[in-house]
Length: 138
Length: 486
Image 1 (cartoon, rainbow over the protein chains, first blue to last red):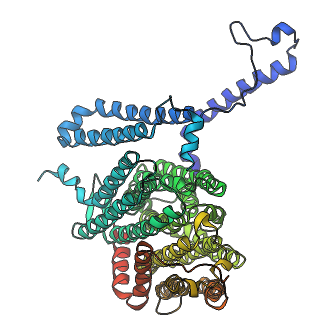
Image 2: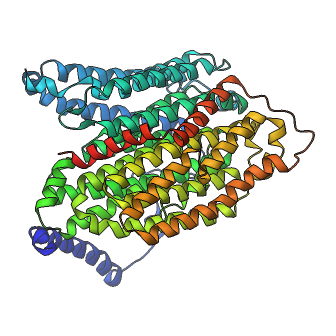
Image 3: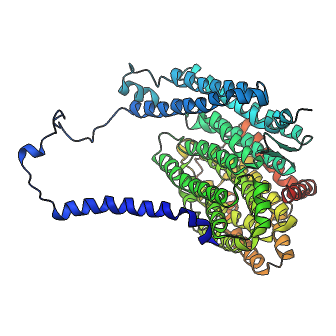
């Protein structure tokens, strides 16, 4: 029976409903009974915020995207290393050096990736974008 | 003997190890070559990797069993699919060598991604743990998403890659959701353990939900109707050798995955998934063949044809039992041989910028290149299912298994569909030989690498059509082991 299986999760569902209700209720109530007065000063950037100089629809260099992606990759590597380090003694006792070499191989593969992107010039910020796209299109 | 070290047998993943190492070497070598230099040596390196992996697979036959903490299963089933998938990659590599030069794509990463994708596909056939299956599915999918966009100057290729990526990751998410639910229902992700748990307990809503979600994910990967809509668009834009791979390699792996999940894990729930498979089979065959009738682009035509063939394999799924499973395995191998060959011909005939991909462009091919025309004729006849080609026995075993399981209507619909399909395959042959092409089009000499790939594919297609017994025996052994794993 589905009901029996899901019954222990009923408090979670209630919690969700209450949280959603309070959130939506506050927004709705302030929209209904709140006062709105706009003035020049109110519409300005708050405190030390910067005055906008244009909209955000610029063309960015694709490098920002690549660097963000690489950051995720190496970040994930670190995330894998931490649990491994935590259980390392246990691994050593149970499987000998197997756990150690597995991680070395893994780091080696990530290192190969680093060499690859390095040689491809992904982290080289001195290359002119226009020049690079010209050489890349041939 | 130490039981823990016994768990780790590198032979169980030796083909995957070889392919990974070859892929890494190719990837690392690429930036060290000059920007203008030829990438052909990297292709040969990839080819050597696939050949070595084939030998490693042959060695695996003598050491079956579960290893790596019961995550990897080596048996005749996995070995059979390893052979199929790695052979597909080898033929695709052979037809890519000249294609990439023709399209002026100088990227060694192409070969590296081919190999990495193959690693994922191979693992999909040998994993016996749902999480491992999921990771393998992702490895294979991500490599093919990128490969689909490799025609850098073509907007259609970028569109193909993006569509494949968005829809594909959506489908994988469905599969993963199913895995999560089945873990919730049974407390394990190990396929034999799930089967044991499901066989003893009563069926709950949760397990049925998990089953349905996983079927959605898998049906997308094999492009079975009603989850087939992406196929023609993606195949049309992607580079042709990549389509050759996509329509056979990941599909063979997805069929293996589906067999493993449906028969390995959900065998006791077959009255639940049977109707779904039945409907998907009928829809795939019918929509695929009707769609293919109306195409003028060869890539789109073969895309619809691949949907139809997914339907035939699903007929074998519906037939169940040993006969059905072995027929599905045999069909996958045959389909791979003939389809990868047909795309290999198309990829060489397409020319620079893939200009000649409409059916009319094949006019006069019989005169311009007898080699291409002859091999393409063999592949088309096999796709129809003419005797003496592999396609005949593949269909024969499928329909025989379906009749043995009293699926008379499904067989009738399947046979009727094969008759419809004959029209569009024959049309291509007629255009090649009966229609005079433009006299000014030059003769097409076939380079050695393309000819070798075609020879392998055509040879296997004919071999499966003339001497199918040994392969079928292999498939039957694989089916028997799949149904018996505990």
